[in-house]
Image (cartoon, rainbow, N blue to C red):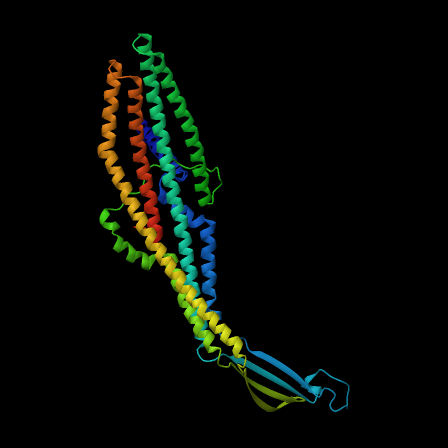
Length: 424
């Protein structure tokens, strides 16, 4: 019996542990990685949601744009007093005759197709703007995450250096107590610590700002908790960052460039539609005539507008030509900006990568060796405390440059992906 009881207890503990682990996993805070933040923003960011809904609304304009106008029904009561033989009547069977005219407006050939194509291009432009909004939102999230990572690692580094300075103060105090160093060394160590504590206050304030900004992008309360950023996305290999290849991808994938291209084609179609307004539209109708209680006569009706206001139409045509030229200029300006931004960010990413390599492979090891040598020299009385402080500052500066270069690489990568309209 006892072995069975022990087995049951063990099984209960395992199940309870698994349940607790699952509950913790479900309640894990966002913010540990940028991918989870992007998933939340895709569903909850109100700016992107609004642009998606506008794009869906633009799609719904396509069908009515190419549809015929609603038909019209006209009813005419003729001779309502029947030659003065009766009082006026509004009943069809008690008047002289009643005409029912059913009319349908028919635009000139090709106008409906052009209107439908213009609506389709408008929907494409709206989709491009929605994708451009998402690209902007995702870039802001990636950039804010990189800044949070930098601030978090910089704060951690500052606390490590603060702890180091506390130990150096003890070394200086011991040497001062033994008459081997001046009291100024102890005071300088304390001043350095005070300066670092002041930096920590600034870092904590900046982290609060980044925290609030990230929650705003995620449509969460400003002070909602977030996890500490744990890892950065890997930087693509240099062969994947070839300018010519990425430029081709930007031409085909940049959402704003795609939206401007749709606007240009829409302006071309609108110009063509404007020139078709030189030709008349038609109205066809059929009219049964009621005499008392029976339909005794049928009429057909044809109507057309006469486009005589040529000054108005020429002004509209000139307007459409100007709008087309403006659309071409906007597309060209967007294309130039895309190329410039791509080149700038690729160069900055390459510089950040080189800086990280230089700091990791050369500057940081040299700074660490210099600090160790200065510390040993100070303990032996061969160097002064100012030299030791300078060595400590060099190692801190090297580590800060490393963190900054890593964060800068993430920011530039996010900008490149915004230009491409997709992740690399």
